[in-house]
Image 1: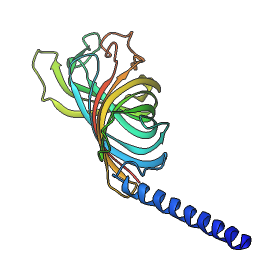
Image 2: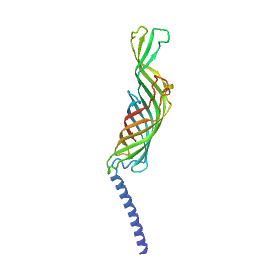
Image 3: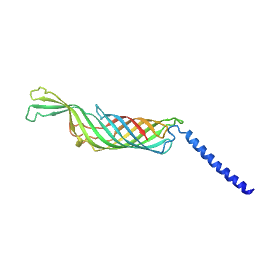
Length: 246
């Protein structure tokens, strides 16, 4: 009799364990609202468009794109690192080059419609702060962080207008491009802030869209002290981005 009771207790314990495991599995599946099933460490990719401007008038459009890794520290706070191609830049003021001291038929050259396009590799690190949504599959987030960028190339485009020695104007030359990498700071730092909406897709992956503002912390113009070469150039960027976490 005592042996039968012992076996019955073990059987009940076994049934209880299976029952608890079944309840846990059912609860986990019931909570899969598209976002709760995420692994804390996720990888993804993003692409976007940039509206760029220096600390003077004129705008340049470029793109960004690259890889993203995210680690969820808690339900509300995540850390996001990115490795990006980042196109920044902006418009420049006109420049007049006086050639009257030199022999020849050209009195001066005017650079008009100037802009500088800078090609960077950047490493942003962001804090993603989630807004509680009571189990919704859409998660709004505030983004704040900073980045280090390395300039791999820089180009200035312009139109050329020539004033001849007799005061007449020669036919203009449009859309000339010059490599000005030697005049651009290679190492650049910036602050970032933005807002994102992340949409859970129900299988552990998600799609997100974000708008982000990037403000440069450096004067990137090496020739800022030389007259007519652009002065102080502080880049700022508004980006509209789309991304996917696998």
